[in-house]
Amino acid sequence: MTAGEPLPPDIADAIEEARPRLAPLGAPLLFFSTIGSTNDRAASIATEGAVVVADAQTAGRGRRGRTWFSPPGSGLYVSTVLAPARARVDPRRATTLLTLAAGVAVAEGIQAGTGLEVDLKWPNDVYASGRKLAGILAEAVRDVVVLGYGINLTASAFPPDLRDRATSLEGQAGKAPDRGRVLVETLAALASRYGDLLAGRFDAILDAWRVRAPAAVGARVTWTAGSNVQSGLTAGVGDDGALLVRTERGIERVVGGEVQWT
Image (cartoon, rainbow, N blue to C red):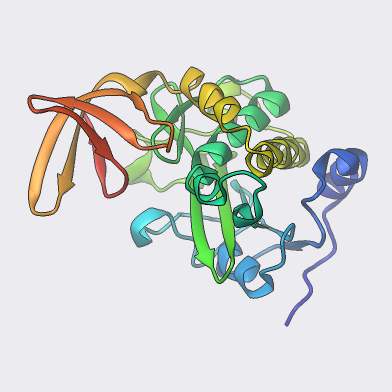
């Protein structure tokens, strides 16, 4: 089992400076110039706190098995191993809220690393100027969860057919981002929000998510429930992280499946 490659200087310097803020994440921290999937590599470790970072993925994926376009030098691809089930308060709720907590952390880390304010869209997307900037994927592996996120650094991080729906940090800021700083700030924010989960500070996570998710209230959505397609206006998120939608029949709770925002 490969142990990874030497850290690039920009990442090594940033990690060294930020190390005290990353605990319990980053032990170990493995870097690969190219890998199949950071989530798969993290799953093979399955030790809480392990982090896998790649410059490119050949088999990157998003929710529902979609391909995550991951060419070299264009994005930041990160996976870490977390254990929300060991939370001191309501482990089941901590596990349920992990994806929302990760969204908050990625948004906070992007802002700290670049100054860019971004929006969240339920359940796991990060948007800027109405276009997708980053995505999050959580996968259960035995008694832990592998939490992966991908951030578009440059416009080459997405193929031509996605250019009207995707954006990058470079496209938003007008200059190339500091990759090392974006990495450590997102990891530091994730470590902090993971601490909130383990300590049962669920309201802090939900409040932070709601502030960054304007589309969670008043946006029209459609989704499939069984064999039926339903639609309505978003009415926030519940305390368990479910998307609330106001329909002709009243408030419906969406806990999974594919949601289309119209």
